[in-house]
Image (cartoon, rainbow, N blue to C red):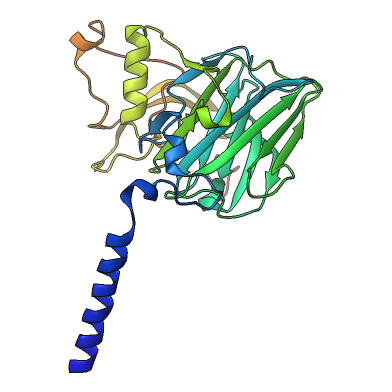
Length: 313
């Protein structure tokens, strides 16, 4: 036991010496998985995505690419770096308020628990390209992501330092003219994005949009964030409901009773509260883009009851 303790102390002291011998000024120059140092990332603009679930909340406008990164025949040539455990989302869109079914280019690196990557042409759906390479993103090593769209409508996604060939490729027969960019993550994952990096030769091609939100837009954003990706309320204990009969008809010849009813459900979600004075005195709210949890209804047809007469439905 004495030798074991003595050996452990010796190992600990060696570790102390190693830590002392490393120059703090050089620590930022240490190579990472894709040979990108944190000292280099100091020249980048940054954007942090909190753990508030899937959603694009800040849009950036793409300026004219006047530097050498956009080569002849290219519509755009962008490069970013990301620190995240999984689900790095990039949205390229025509407008800064895309609707759920609008055509966009959504690129996800490290989807499915960091097991695959994909290009979609709608937010959250319509996958058009997939790559099964796992473990491409990390919370501790920055992953470079390079996106090129050429004049022929081809979209390429590269991971520089991983391989020379594109990780993802999609040919769009009706290519989009991309004006806006946004970043996101998924679920409870956080992400830190780096863009407009000076060491890559990028100037200021991406600019945040300065836009004053309306009271309705502010409340919609507030409620969608509070709803936590339309998840079930943790404190939900009951759901009340009642019916209103709209019509009632009985066909004597076939012994068929037909009814039409209107069902209303009531439940309380303590997350969906707000002060009316903070949102233009709005005391109630209804919006088609409101993403909150709702009970799932599954209508079932009652089986026929057999007897001496015709079946009753």
